[in-house]
Image 1 (spheres, rainbow, N blue to C red):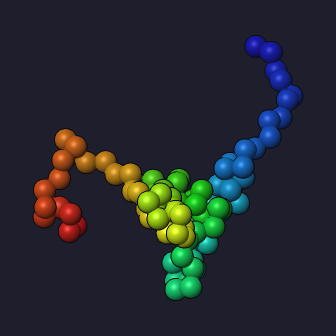
Image 2 (cartoon, helix red, strand yellow; image 1 turned 90 degrees about the vertical axis):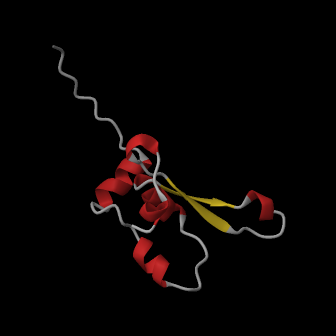
Length: 87
């Protein structure tokens, strides 16, 4: 084996993860602030780590940006019943 002394630079996301080990960023204070209508770019990255995606509503983009969320989930068999939506 050839030993290499080359150090690779951390990517932006790797730096975020190393600086915030809980992967929370400032998500909680942002949620608690009623004046904020969307997450910062840094918090957006943290949300993606957890499978939550912030995007603006394309249908309302011409008027003003209105943000919506898409949550990526996994269900056994790919289906859930109405009662499972509540849990």
